[in-house]
Picture 1 (spheres, rainbow, N blue to C red):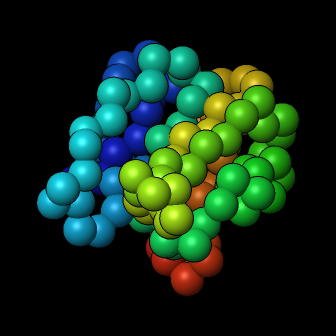
Picture 2: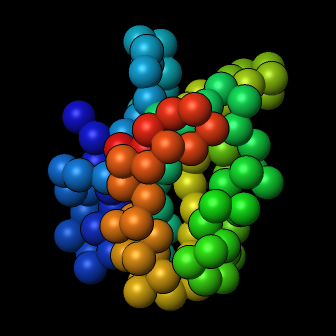
Length: 108
């Protein structure tokens, strides 16, 4: 199931950005509590922070971004987190990027 962090404080909701393919041995991540923090999934194995920064800064100031990597830090686990400076920026980014192609993958 795909989901996003509701910037209105309601927690995970069905809709935007999922946790990627596979996932059998992946550890579960705690859902972000910052209303401006987006969980971004279905990323390419080759996605790095600079790529997330590039696509999300079109929607405002990116406070931080992080791609979660495997234990050897050699490739993406196909998800990450982006913190925007305002809730409006986070909402706009989530709504605009839903189902958009990014590095050969469709963000959900």
